[in-house]
Amino acid sequence: MNDVAVPDAVDAVVGWRAWAIARVDGRFRLRSVVAPTLWHPYQSVEATCLRPGRRLFRRWNVQHEAPSAGCECGVYATDPVTAASYASGHADGSERRVLGRVALWGLVAECERGWRASSAYPCQIVIPEHRFGDDPAMPFEVLAFDLAEYGVPVTIADEAELEELMRESYPAGR
Amino acid sequence: MKVGKVLRVYVVEPIKIPVPSGRPQQPEDRRRPSLLRRR
Image (cartoon, rainbow over all chains, first blue to last red; front, side, top):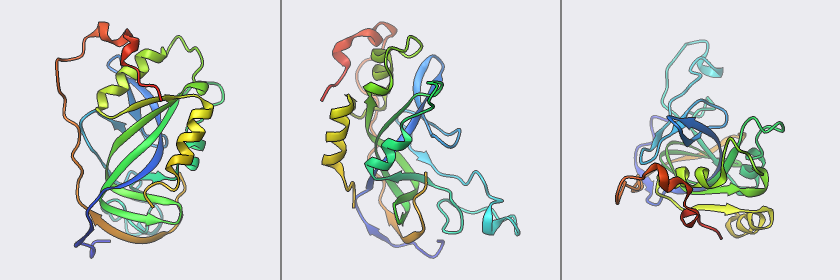
């Protein structure tokens, strides 16, 4: 993808994704679901390939920028229904997840069912109320307060509201 | 997350990331229900 250099889209791509909730210095923060990447308030996430030895690049051990067509790296976003399926978390409740809209920019690879990008920041965070219940380790109001520090709307949605929100948003950014 | 094969690639201008504003948040703020946003 190194030969792509001319900006041909002005507005950021907006898709949906899930985040796990991590506790950092006593605060609830967003963390990537499949990687240990933390999303900090007021800082964009810049993608790096966490598996540079994977696939095509394994045999040459080549470092590459993310996203790369020959790899699976980059910050992911997809449609709201798929994102919601990833926001279920673990069945035993050991990992809580939220979902929301995310802006992608920089180098953006449009894929069959979503995007992979080099830079990202949340646009909206949705807390699926029905998936949290009354968890004393993660009080609802504290979670919402901490996530509001990202400076984007934080929405608490029950199951019906979440479905409505996804219907309104689909297909997001396409 | 599985998003399938790459169809095309483009370069997008950066967005404006929110910046901190107002007074720093205090620990006691964390339990103010008025700060929650509900649809």
